[in-house]
Image (cartoon, rainbow, N blue to C red; front, top):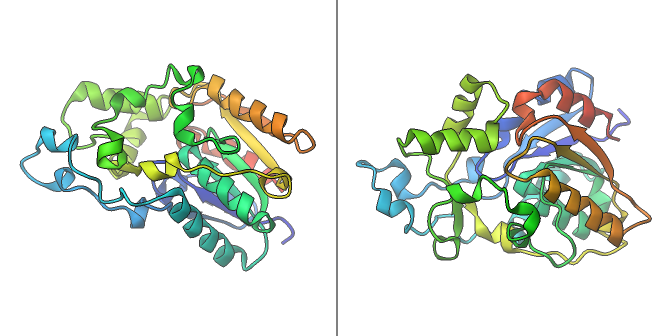
Length: 280
């Protein structure tokens, strides 16, 4: 098989499970594909006490220090590097990173460009050199972000970007659905929400990577934009691409537009599978 293996990495609060509608469609074409858990998520997630304790205590949601507060961008990149090495057997793979997995892919591609055949960013943070992903959440292009108002607690104090999936506040849960799954079937969106974990390690968003021409700048990259995204909006997605192309004009970013919200792996899995399968 000449095409590189596809490795899928989810964003904050999700897990490798979110690619379960895409991977069978990719594998059906004859392409090897696997999804992995990011540090602090999936099998590496650790839930705060308030999330499972009864009775539910709203006050603890905003104050309990996260059990994944010590997870850094270094940790996440180390884990992904080990996963890529194991999956590819030393051969380069194509990595598809969603949302907050973007900075992790960037770090791995910078440190070990020989392991990455193609870096694909699906409505993901693709930060410029020495700029944290968190910095982009304060930029004008992120003003319409509908996830930020849902966060609970001070990330600097609790060590995480925290969402309250235990609340019975119907309005809050509806806003969560709109932020992540605006065009996803409501039944499927409900099921997905039930699998989310509350804490995304703030350290992944705070870390920075110095990008070089021989590192990240040498790796083929594609940015898959989501035109209906209200978590990482189209204006911010465009900024990532513009900054990358300005820094490394000899290796421009290929851009593919998806008419979808933040989670096209659930809303249009056929289209996502077709696009990523076409990547070398």
